[in-house]
Image 1 (cartoon, rainbow, N blue to C red):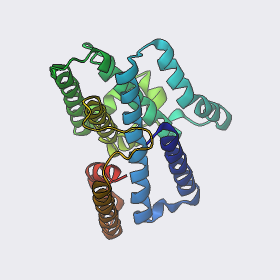
Image 2: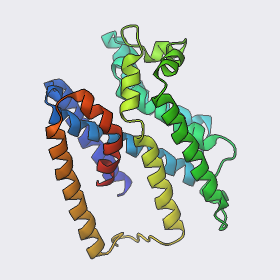
Image 3: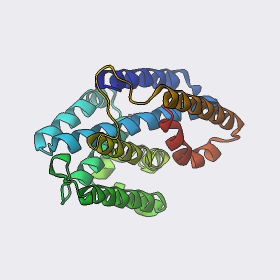
Image 4: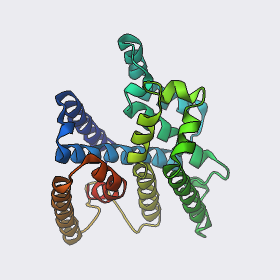
Length: 257
């Protein structure tokens, strides 16, 4: 999808999430789990979009960082001042801001492996995969080290940004719940851009990415996946049970989009 379509997708998801919070629909577990997929999809797009930009443009300048931080945080910081709320109260903005820094650090770290520097040997592409594997190990380490995680984000100055009611437990919960969504988007973007560069995928203007047969098969699998997920979400007895499975299942559900 082009930029206009993904922006519209983000907008509709934000509207649904806003209605969900205002209406208190989180008490209904099936609704709660479907909205969790929307949050994962937004973070997937965060990984996909920032990875694509850095990979194609190679712009790691301070101007670019400030531009993104301003776009993500300005209105929320105004809300924090006007409503006298801590930054973590609006948890989604700290979440996407944190992941932006992770994506930036992963790709900006030496060696910078960008498309304009890549050669046909494939070693450059292996370098990206090694970075993504390192990021995955980093995520898994923190996911199974709650005490270490909390000790880091409870220290100043992180505590001023990530504490809510004097604790970082809420931040730990939010971070862990969708911990694989961003790296999923980064990997998806990498594979798509590499296949496009090698002309395995060609997407000319007005031309479909896949043949009609493949598109029909993917649509069928998407519908089956959605129905299966809905049945599973309806069968969950507690949020705790669902949340334990969500980081792994949401990867499949976001892919069906």
